[in-house]
Image (cartoon, chains in turn orange, purple):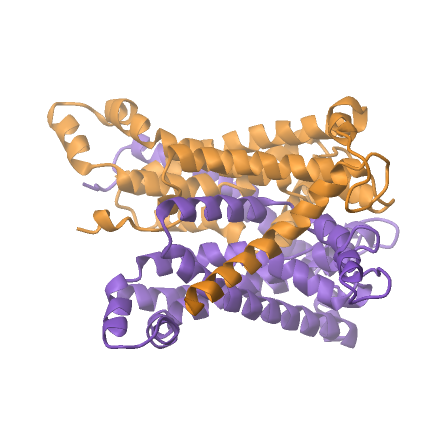
Amino acid sequence: MINTFILRLFLGAIALFMAAPLAVVAGVSFNERKSLSFPPEGFSLDWYAQIFTEDSWRSALFNSVGVAVGASSLAVVVAFPLAWFLWRFHAPWARIVQVLGLAPFILPPVITALGFLSFWTTAGSYGQAWTVVISHGIFFVTLPLVTLTLGFEAVDDSLVEAAATMGADDRTILRTIILPLILPYIISGMAFAFVLSLNEYIVAYMAVGFTVETLPIKIFNSLRYGYTPTMASVTVLFVAIAVVVFGLIARFGDLPRLLGAWRHDDDS
Amino acid sequence: MKIKPRTFSDYATIGFPAGMLMVFFVIPFGIMIAVSFFQRVQGAFYEPAFVFDNYARFLTSFFGGILGFSIGLAALVAVVSVLLAFPFTYILTRMTRRTQVVWLVFLLSVLSLSEVLIGFGWSTLLSRTAGISNLLVALGVLDKPMSLSPSFGAVMTGMVYQTFPYTVLVLFPALSRLDPSLVEVARTLGSGPVRSFLNVVVPALRNSIVSTLIMVFVFALGCYLLPQLLGKPSHWTLSVLITDQAIYQSNMPFAAAMAVFLVLVSLSLVAISLLYGKKENAA
């Protein structure tokens, strides 16, 4: 039928548009020589090895991963008590704190970045490596906050009431009922924050751009001096990490629901 | 059941997140606003003062040009993105759950990609030696390969690439919650799939479309690297200029003043879009 054909064509065009730059980057990353050419000439995995063997790329990778681990943990540590409080208690003023937690993600990132730059210079800690962990932790607090809020909403009230009737206090309920139920939401929130922190450029650059080189900062700096194939292999690596992480979330969790869809069997 | 917080330990749980957000988000914001009134010192950084010089520079034609360009570009990007993403998301939400998940994983991966990497990807795709112009030569459309960036088209393409997955994810909840019987009724009454999409789905989600347009506009306004990597200096936007003033020109007070301006624009737009979104949810 003509309609199905147009539909397929449209979806195919979108898929091509989204995949094209990644495909070309993947292609040039396999070039044998240090040239930017596509289709690739020869085949080599040297540029992937270089991420781990050349000191400057390896240390940038370690910096990025270290920052992302620290920042995503901090984001969860800040978001968890907030989401729990909002779920447990009736306190309209707490909405203000919730909005503060959502704000960094809605505002243009340049603003948050500039805020951190002024803050760390005023505090006298400008350029210290740990400042970027805190900056990213706050910047990405929105992600675990959103997933955890969804997680708490999904907790069956009757379980909590049953436990309370049997004499369990808040702490026991939290440990024995809530935590196991919302663990998937903690993990997915942390994973979202981890991947985004790994990729984040402007906040990291304004906080520690001149002292700590993360991978996005290193690539941007190298771009000014021309092209090296390692940029391409790092891009492919980052796409692969994102696909694996989001794929795992989808495999073990309910991705459409996390992104705001209602399952129709929930409606009743 | 929710209760009112009473004891100290009840309040203590929110104390930590509230404190962290206060110290590391609200205070930096406050400092930034303060700095926007400071005076720049040549050779040094800045000194405390209370001057409106940095805001007065908004009245120059240089700033006006950049502001006009940024707003026009972000608006164009938002319109193109929503035009592409709305039908796409509608189709997506009608697909099997499995296919939806595959698309969502792919779109999330692109969305999380650093602007640095998107800029690098597109500049490679548009380059002379590795880009699509080689394909056009092979097809006989072009005589010899050429570089397609930097150019306005490259900036637009890169930004639509970046905003498209975001637009899909913003539209996804509303479209996946759309009552399928609406369309079924239209189909039963004899309108074709395209007509029922245009006459039933689009009007039903009018408010969502408006609020998505605004959200994507704000998102595009925040794009800070693509105009720099894929465009000429004449394609720089407010976000690029803020970064440039803060880092390379060491003019923090002016950068801060522009940032305060950008916050006000973004916040008022987000507030409008939330109001629109509310109306529809209430209906």
